[in-house]
Image 1 (tube, rainbow, N blue to C red):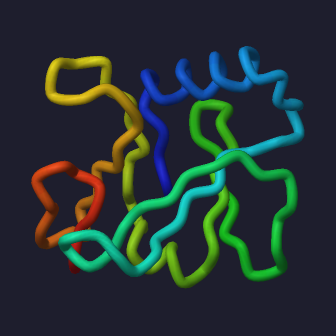
Image 2 (tube, rainbow, N blue to C red; image 1 turned 90 degrees about the horizontal axis):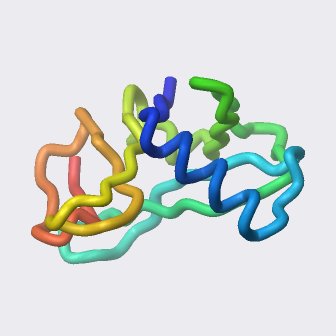
Length: 108
């Protein structure tokens, strides 16, 4: 499962409204190679589910990831922060053994 915090849910809803994104679109998250710790997170809106995608819904937010990324994202929480430490979406990933200082990349 991939979880969504209340703050992330609110921000996703706001972004969809502000950008005129249809309700049929969902949040696609993933992991790609790169960043100072070796792996980086990706996030975007999408409306096409692929045959091997893993589909979850939490708090009314549909989250989709490819199977390979799901191996790294299992039990991860998608969160949103408005704090002084940095504003934006971030992943609270219990599988990460190391995170870079900026929080954009990780390793397992």
